[in-house]
Amino acid sequence: MNRSRLLMIGGFALAVGLLVSYTVYNRLRFSSGSGNERGVQVAVAADDILVGTKLEPHNIRIVTLPQSAVPAGAYSSVSQVAGRGVILPMSKGEFLLPGKLAASNAGAGLPSMIPPGMRAVSVRVNDVVSVAGFVQPGTRVDVLATGTQGGGNDRQTTTVLENVAVIAVGKSLDRSASSESTTTTAPVITLLVSPDDAQKLALVSQEGRIQLSLRNPLDTKKGGIGATRTSSLYPGETKVVATEPKSKVHKTVAKAATSAPAPYAVEMIRGNKREENKFPENKF
Image 1 (spheres, one colour):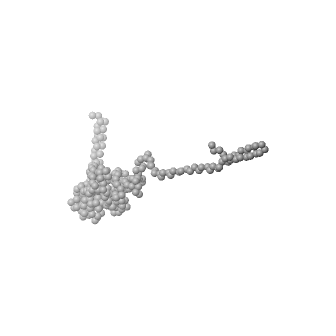
Image 2 (tube, rainbow, N blue to C red):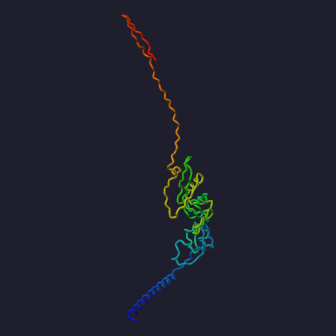
Image 3 (cartoon, rainbow, N blue to C red):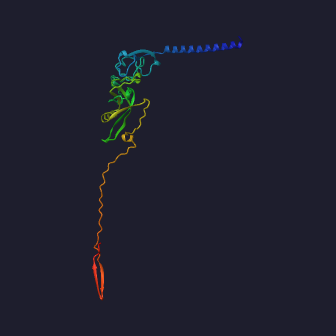
């Protein structure tokens, strides 16, 4: 084996040794630092927890973790979270955080999911109105109303509410990922709206027919959408306008007044005697 090959092998071995030494050094330093960091107790989910669940002690587990691994706002005891409602689904081992729980004394179930200043309003639906059952808790919809205005015959459809959150389908509050791939049909869907929109929703439920339009959750844009009328669907249709029949005008032809025919004169001469006789005009 020549000298150049030996030098190449030696350099490669030296490089590998330096890389291994550096890796071991970093691991030892991290282990030393973690060992010196104070551990704290934190509350996590003992099992998978569904929306609307009222937390019981058996749903909560206390673990000890390094201070740097604990997120801000995490709870450290069972008494801090027991009895509070869950407003977002949680998996086993997930931290119990304020944003996933209802406020203290807010209860559990649907009431705990209603933020202050908002209202939950239910509307009656069917397979078509609920978009074949794909309207599920956690989705967002537009509310369309169809009816007539001012007692006219021209029906119209108007987008009454936009980007409204669905918080319940029937009595189901589940927002888990598994429910998004399946369809659940219920006769009633509950929407989360403002008090003003709650009045609109109640009115259109009585005055017209409601249709829900499913939105992409990333599409939050709201725009002024004008009403669509029946007449706009048939632009080529001409309306027959009823008109009153014109009264017949009887033209009166005034007969020209005729004057009496002027008589004509006949002059007769007999010798030195002259006579003039007048005769009326001959009509024949």
